[in-house]
Structures are given as C-alpha cells and as structure tokens.
Length: 559
Image (cartoon, rainbow, N blue to C red; front, top):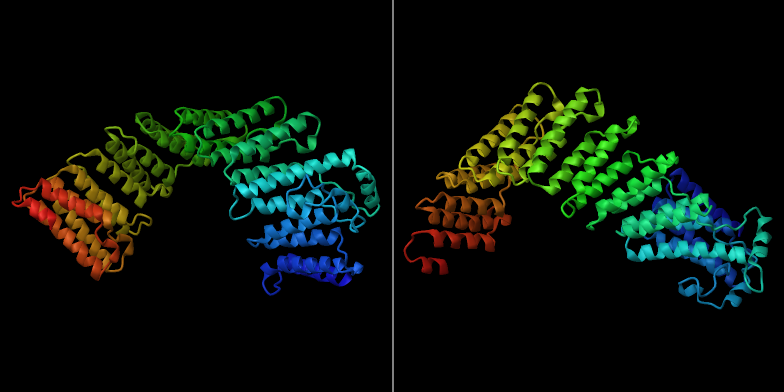
C-alpha cells in the first residue's frame, strides 16, 4: 500500500506543480494504472495492497486535472469500482455490468470494511469531466442523469437503512476515521447536470432540473436552492436551442428571476449575463417568432431603467438587438437598425461610455438594412456608410469602415436592381482601394467585395454590365497571379460575369459567355484548378444560346 500510495501521491504533486512526467497529460492515466494494479494485487490475496478512499480520490483528481479526451471514461471506471467494491448499490439500481450482482453477495464481500464509499465530490468530478468533454451527446447526458439519480437513491438508502444490515451503522463505523459518507447532490451537482444538458442540446432537461431544484428548495432543502449560475445556464441552454419557442422559454426564465428578486431574493436578480443570453436566444428564434424583437426591446428597456450601473445596456447589447431585428427583416427592421445606431450615439454623448458606437455595430446595422427587402434599402445603407466614413474622417477611429461595410452596401445595391447600381458599387470598390493606399487597415478589397460588385453590374441590366464585369474579373486574375490570394476569382465570380453579359443584351453576349467558359476550362488546367466550370456554368451558357439570335442555336447547344 505504502509504495503505491507514495507513487500516486508523487505523481499528483508533479501534476499540480506543472512539472513534466513523460508527458504532463499522461499522469492521470499512470495513476489509474497504479490503482488498477493495486486492486488486482488485493484480489489476488495481497491484503496490504488494499486501496483506501484517499487513493481513489487522488486518482480521480489526477484524471480531472490532465483533461485528456478519454479520461472521463477512466474516471467513470474508478467511480464504478468504488461503488462495486464498497457494495453500496443494489443490483436493480445501477446500470453497469459490474453492478449486476446479488445485493447480499456484495454486502458480504471482503471489501465491506474498506472505506471506499464515493462521496459527493467524487460524483461531481465525473460530472464536471462530462460537462467539459469535447462532445457532449445524449449518451453522456443519460449517464450523468443516472449518476445524479443514483446519488439521490443512496441518500434515501442512508435514511432508510439496508435490510439485514443497517446502512447507517456501517456509516458510523467509518465516521471514526474522519470520513463520514455523504453523496447527497449539492448545487454544484445540479448546476453541472444543467450544463451537460445544455451542451447536449437538451434545454428542456436543463429546465426540468431547475424546477426540481426549486421544488427541493421550497420543501426546505436550501442547499440546492437555484442560484444565478443555475438560471443563467438554463437561459444559455435555450439560447443555443433552435426550437420555435426558445426565445419565449428564455424570456420566461428571466421573468421568473425578476419575480423572485422583486419578492426579496436579490441573489437571483438578472445580471448582464442573464440578459445577454436571453438576447441571444431571441436572435436565434426571431425568424420563427414574430414577438422575438419586441421581447428583446422589452429587455433593453428593463436594462435602461435599471438603477444598477452593471445592468445598463452596452454596445454589445444594442448590437444584439439589431441582430434580432435583422433576423426578422422588413421595413421595421431597417428603421430600428437606424434608430438603434442613433440611440448608441445619444447614450454615449450623455455619458454612458459603455455605449460607444463601433464598426461592428454599424456593420450589423448595414447588414440588417441590406437584407430588409425594402425598396430603398440601398439608399439607406449608403447613408449609414457615409455617416460612418464622415465620423471616421472626423477622428472617431472606432468607426473605421471595413471590407465588410463596403461589401454589405454593394450587396444592397446588387439587390436593388437599379440601373446605376453597378456604377455605384464600382465607385465603392475604388474607395476601398484608395483607403487601402492611404494605409487604412481592414478595408482591403477581397473576393467577396469584387464578386458582389460584379453581381451589382449583373443585376443592373446596364448595357455596359458585361464589359465592366469582365474588366473587374481581369483585375482579380491579375491580382491573384501577383500573389494576392484574397482576390482569387471563384466559380461564382465567373458565373456572374457570364450572367452580366447576358443581362447587358449586347449582340455578342453569347460569344462573350462562350469565351469565358473556354477561359475557365483553360485556366483550371494551367493556373487554378478551383475555377473549373460546374454544371451551373454550362447551364448559363445554354441560357445565353437560348436568348441569343444566333443561327443554328440547337446545334450549338448540343456542342
């Protein structure tokens, strides 16, 4: 016993101090192997090798600390060995093969005088490892739920006692060693189970666990009274859910927190994390729920009216509100995006420094306006971008337009179908080049910007659409060939150039489209394999033939 105990203890110290042993990540597995050897020696008759509770706990801690991907399953084996060897669980309670023994046989085994009963902290270590796993699926959630059910069952057993042998008497036997048995689930247990449910994509299980905690607390068990972490994790679970009611569910949790706080429990008053999580849930449900943006507005209003400075909405909160409206779309979304930007400026000017407008907030507003579907979306987006540029030129460096800013406005222009949209989009593209030449960062034109500009020409129906689109494509190829890989033309780029020629209505549109298709084939073989034409490209060529006045169209289409 002493040799194994010293080895495991030494490895644990090395791990805690950050010193290497082969690999820092191998320490937990090595401790597990030592424990397995001890158990086997004891089973073979070497009674001096019987591990006690402290050794089991050291191994569990070592497995938790190194956080190797497979360590949670090793920790699970340690816990199950503790349950098995201590004869703690009847065969109809636990679900592993090692526990499928007759209860009386287990109570009579030679381990019954060895204090290896698992405590609350042992169960909590396993639960924490599951919650922190790279992937938390339904299987892990089921296991975690069963663990907590087992803890609750053992507490009932402790109170009622085993048949033929009082469980409580066995507990007293070990209390003299200073390690009384206690595996009662605590608030960490339930909060971790909620986190596992959230990670597994089961928000309804998270909320059911919250309700169980509230019920136990109301019955007098204040040790599991839900705290702010409990509520926030449940809200986060709904925020990550894609269900139709996720926004309503998250808002309902917030209202419960607010109600409890108003009734005197200040410990659960919603904080910024709570409110931001609800905002995120409303964003994800906005496309499916008409009320989501209005619920988000209500939360913002609550924050604005709060006397707690830590609960005042900040730039991130208002940006989330814009996102929520953006998911909804329509005229109201465009109007609210503009208005919220105004609100940010006003609050900042009024001394709320946490509301300082930034480029990201503007970009989200631009995206909301561009995708709103209103007839004047392009003009609205241009106005916001111009405001952004003017403020930047006046010295507000946080409002520097970015590549995304310009590309989003070009996208609005492309959606508008205005005959001048191509001209305006190309002017914006040139502005990006000018700012880049002036040394402004984060505004470099890229493939998306050029392709969106080409799309604006395509949708304009302008007689020069094909010519200008081909010019921009040639510039992209030149930049790419010079080593600027952020300007690599892709199949979408070429397809839009072909469509631009078709929409221009020129007499030689078909020949131009065919030349681009041939160019793609040649370039894919000699320069860039990623620009090989797809089925869509050939379909566009067939469309060009169909719309052309070329003689013998049928034969050309077959070719």
